[in-house]
Length: 457
Ligand code: MV4
Image (tube, rainbow, N blue to C red; front, side, top):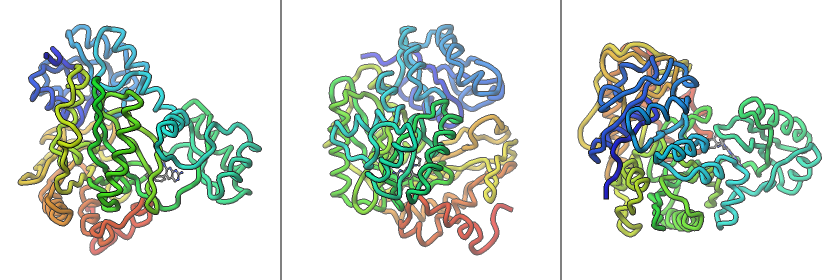
């Protein structure tokens, strides 16, 4: 069965390159799209064709649905891969693609919509037997409702935006006298960030880990899970370091979580790649959100399973069955991904500019997903992530030592990057022991950066 004749990649940067590589290996021609600021980008150079879709600001280029559909139309592409961010979880875009007779490489618009609304997502998961954080169930509309719900749930509580994500519009209330304030602040922030002031309430977990499960499902009722990733190391809701498996789980907990998740996804009739995010505390999992796209940190799952997730996404979108079953999947060793951002490693202020020297590390067990090259200029208009350094080892210890040596080899000159932060993290005793939760990085950032000698000079 034929896959696609031509795939348009509706994204930029490292993920556009990642998708392009999968297409090339599947021998599917590619169309790159780019803004005027990305004319010299690596994915544009390597694609079979390219189309300029607008000026630098994302709103006028990578978020311009009509420009993207037109680009697919004039190049004769028959499928669109949305990548991550931008329009990857936009049900309107997915619908528009399908209405133009093209294939959206992702789930159905309905599944995107259900998971985009956090209350509906939680209710759906409850009905499918997935454990969720105890909470209000529906939305909270008045101060009185907020007080009533908080007393039922028990303090501390967390108020979240229904249309939220990324921690915006999230407010903790430790006691009754903080409820009114938290409620109004959360509502105002939700309105400002998402144009929707609806909020709901949950019990606040104090020191959980962020554990997410990767799933794949096809049109034929096959569902598999590919284990978990631990993404607890974040700063301001931006992931910094991810690992698979999680140092906090046992094989029993992993099997239990995998079973719950695959059963739920099967009952939903979901297809494509997806990630279910959980908080994990005191041996218990609580569903938070589901992402209906490929994720930035997918390579660590690929490294421990040997499965190319982007190729599988393309195969599934074309109607082919998954090329393996759950019992064919074995978990092999350990993988860690460091996100390298073009930022000052002390202040995290973006540092765009020209790369005048570039040397990526290599060797056994090292993977670098990056669009950087010597002479390339990192534009200032987009996300500051410029590379993902992924290390794989037979054991976590081997993975850590391999990562440490690769971090020492990596040369990116001309701009500032967060490589020095990762060089500190890989030597941090808590990290080496795998003992960290979602607050570890922000709590330990200063001491981590200060440790031994000054960095980023
Ligand atoms: C929580 C929580 C504690 N308790 N929910 C942050 C982003 C959003 N997707 C969910 N988030 C959280 N939800 C309850 N009931 C703590 C966080 C949270 C967090 C979660 C994952 C990774 C890093 C985090 C950092 C701060 C807060």
